[in-house]
Length: 59
Image (cartoon, rainbow, N blue to C red; front, top):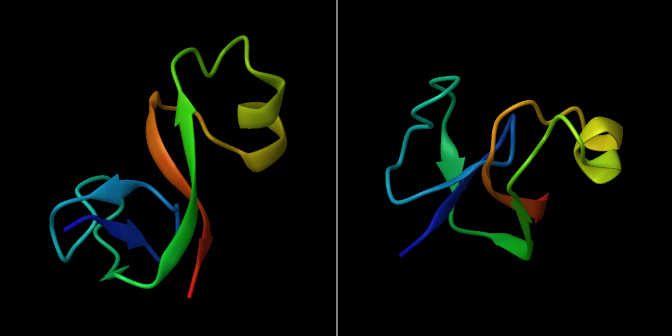
């Protein structure tokens, strides 16, 4: 099962975010895959600086 960080929206299999150490939630929707955050306008808009899989909405 994938969980989404309640702060940075990073998807992970853990119940604590490996990046920012905040709790995660199983209640998320929308999948965003960022491969090159330096060149991505979407990543820039969302404040994403690291490549990875992100949830668009986390509850």
